[in-house]
Length: 348
Ligand SMILES: NC(=O)c1ccc[n+]([C@@H]2O[C@H](COP(=O)([O-])OP(=O)(O)OC[C@H]3O[C@@H](n4cnc5c(N)ncnc54)[C@H](O)[C@@H]3O)[C@@H](O)[C@H]2O)c1
Image 1 (cartoon, rainbow, N blue to C red):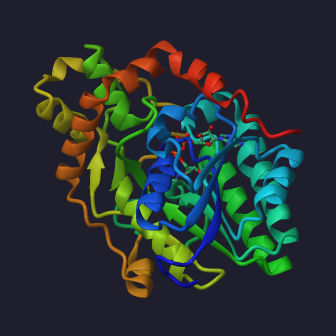
Image 2 (cartoon, rainbow, N blue to C red; image 1 turned 60 degrees about the vertical axis):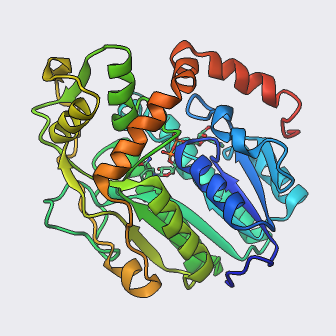
């Protein structure tokens, strides 16, 4: 697909009111003035219209509230907008919640993805891009650097549902020649992330002078990627990848959870009394490790943001957006979700 600023494109983004989706919509609207973006989101607890203030009255942006698991909603959005490219971010994403309610994760992440695939195939779209995760490869040693050909060994219900969705997407390519890509990313961090996730949870708790829960001995390792680096990777995949290709995206920053907490404590001038060790969750993965060699070699992508700089910018963003956090902490954001979208429901 060509990458040109004059070219027009109609892009359906699902889950665009969540963390990465909203960052990507912001990125696209700034970079491509002729792209029409349709944000199709159910606004679950993880969706927040406050993440999208920059879209206000933007002529190329449309929001539709709808559910990827509801056939009629998906049919309607395809019928009304005729998208050429679909990027599926919509998902239940929090591992802890998947342990409590795995069915919900399978319904949204697998059956919802399949409903999108069905419509994408029927409408002969140009490209279907599935946003996936390093968790599909399961827990490995930091040196493992799983490639796109490594086998999938998901360990928790969230990871299992994402791996199943990847298989559905690959099956659609093999069976119906649907042109697809899958992008499997390590942990993103940055603005607009719901404060149940580790980085904003730490910052939010410290702002509230509350303790930071840390699983087990805190020695689990995660690889951290700044969300804008992820957006650049997805931009390249969307414009330059051959259909059928899967790409891992990650950084070189492998960090123990406890180290990450200590860095944030230091940067916010707090001390270690805020750390609260809690029991390991079942199925807790010690480490994910993926190689981004393929996307570097084929599409010329590599992460640009220095980890500590990205972390500093992220801390400052949350410190400067305490209203955004406050509206989540108080539940007000859900009332705003209802208010702003009450005339904007897909007919179903
Ligand atoms: N955040 C990360 O570090 C990370 C890493 C790798 C992969 N991913 C993947 O990236 C995608 C986005 O992650 P995120 O962190 O932005 O998630 P998020 O939880 O912040 O946002 C998910 C969005 O999906 C929407 N949604 C949920 N169920 C829906 C449904 N049935 N129909 C329509 N919309 C629905 C929610 O309202 C929300 O806006 C997910 O697919 C996730 O698996 C995330």
